[in-house]
Length: 414
Image (cartoon, rainbow, N blue to C red):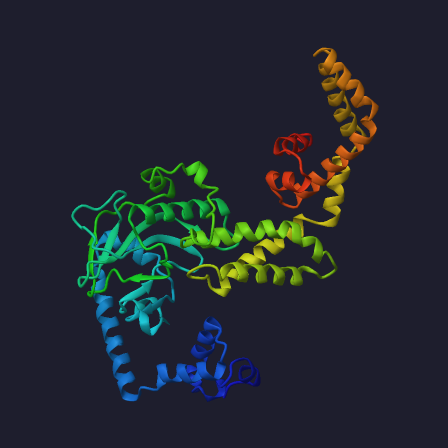
């Protein structure tokens, strides 16, 4: 029988047979249902409610797995990288309309569809092509493998990467942004489905698909970018312009960039003892709101990882003491004297410009104190806004001055 905690957190858990309880709890945590009792009934019906039919189906799948274990020895070497980087317990399914299940890698390889990347890394770029694919004349860059549905000619294109791209908070944003740009470029060039989530794909060792393997080359993101006429240096800062443009990894990049810029200005409202948990929850709420704009939203676990990463960095680097230090560093007597020297040089240059310029300088000196005070206040405001993550265009609009002026003011600190 399940513990009292399991009864409270996982409704109906005590009605699940003990040998299936751990699987039920794992599935419940993964799916986060709103109606726990309804979820339990459906779960029991799916896993235990089909009696002997379910047992025979499971037995058949087990026999298929044993047979597959022998057949894997005959798998072409060109598909070995794909096999080596499958998750330990991937999502899999025989019919996507019936949902996904989690199995060991050995068992999952007996299903028609399988998760091709582990949760924390991207080793395979997969495109979903919803039109007939020409196997004889593939478009450059030529994929490592293509799995086609023989009934309609549609299929999945696979590009195997030489090095995996980490997509957790431990990874760097530049490789993720380059990956997002490459995925987007491939999607456009291959006329693939831009709404494909990229979680599961056709199983390359399943007999239901027509699989064609072209080569054993392992791609780098830079090589793929060259084939797509993308500048790898520039695309390392690629960010989708809208949720509609975000494709596969682009969703992670878009969420991170939009949320971090929002966080730079909002964190001041959470500066308080033990405020980090509240701050992380606030970022998570903002991420959820953005995530709902995607055609295929990210999972809650991915949102929590992004929120944790942004919260920890901003809490450590944007502090009241740091803001005060910025003001003190940009308003020291030496810095102010240097600004005065520059203003004097500009005034001297104006005097050399002629009588009209001289009159302007003299008039300016007469009211200089008032203007300098206003200008210094505006400069200080500009530096504070910049420290909070605002762009020069946004600061210029806020203060009502030209963007070039903002650039000049901020360059004084360099």
